[in-house]
Image 1 (cartoon, helix red, strand yellow):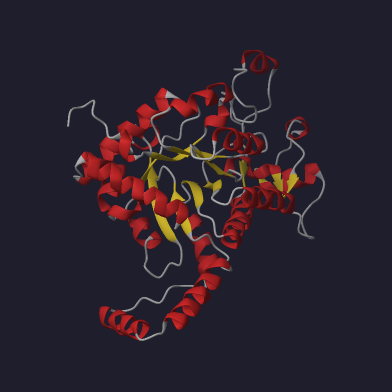
Image 2 (tube, rainbow, N blue to C red; image 1 turned 90 degrees about the horizontal axis):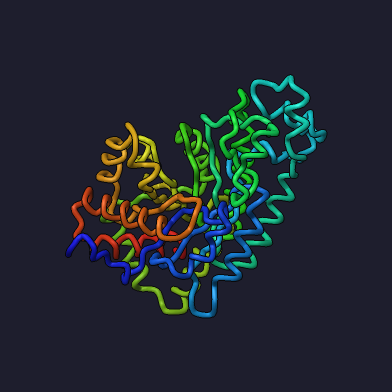
Length: 371
């Protein structure tokens, strides 16, 4: 196969991207070579935009966009835990969830009025009900992120009007971070919603893989899978083979009912995974009741000093838990180019023949999304 003969015909699925950050480029999505874009929402400004492009670009036959609805940890301070013991005033809320405690009234003044966590969950549930295959994302934890400073007149004058509002857009960073316990509260509520709705999730984790795993373990507690020996599995298969068709259907329905009431998502993607090999073994423990996947992007994972580490991670993963993504904020040829680049890199690292690798990655995405 020549360098130009990339097998787009098999179907390449972008497991994580942000085209609604540059709405002017959304019109280029139908002409893209990628078969499906798994489009993430992150904050108040883009939830409806993700919904709109899914409605406008998904026809009766073509489903180019898979919408995902969630609240990113970078914006978790904008969510107010409206439990009875939580502060209800804007200033009190931000002083409670940010560290160090802001002592600049002007900084707090320019922050948005926080949204109640219960309202976020209710709105996300409504959107998930409207889109039966939609995912929950982008959600997660981030220990390194600092809030950008307030907009200056120069910032406003120089901002790119094509970008959807709400992101940093080059502003200087403040010293303030979102407390991890607040991030975990916002993440946990969205993970429980994904479990309620039986939807997969896309998880952001920066310097927080241990905290993500702790959060998941709290939700998994009491629901762990029974890990059987080969002999025990053979005995179970023999017992299931002896059941009548009617008994098999009842058992299947019972297992499905148990899964649908779980307080955790059935499938999880650790997007642009940047951690070491060791946590992978914990995420993939056979007793975990969620199936965990790992996606990789050329822009995030294969640049800078972490490139060698990610190569070791990709080599260590099982064939059926690898996904590809662009994590790009603009749709079109550049997104296709990044998807091809990361797919070729993964195939080289895994020793996969290209067509075989593209097929494996397509099958993995379908299983991650649909189960």
